[in-house]
Length: 99
Image (cartoon, rainbow, N blue to C red; front, side, top):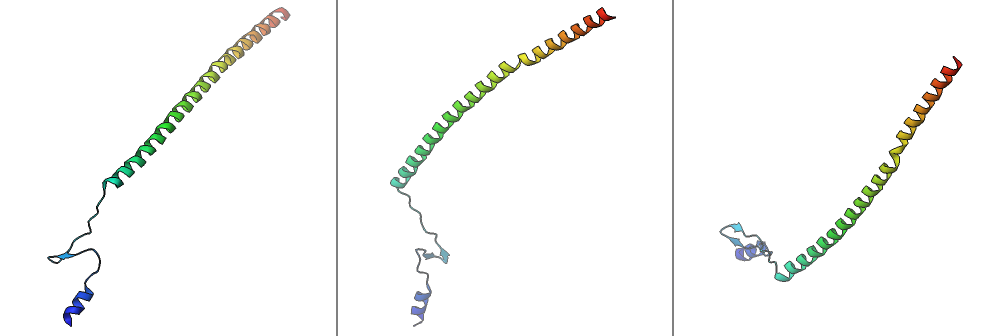
């Protein structure tokens, strides 16, 4: 009767006891699982490569737009300087002729 109680109390999981120690369950990974994971990883890498190309192209486009804005804006300070010099000359000439 005691022997039946001991067997009933024993764990029913896949673990077995060796020398008083519990042996952890063994994980088996087959070639199909490895292949499936590699295929999924390959797909993800291809998607990332495509996204990277798009981001690179978009960055180049933004760079070109910024350069175009910089090239069209640089004459504005020059024009402002020329107008101020012209106004100064007109003021000096006006002061010299009146005075």
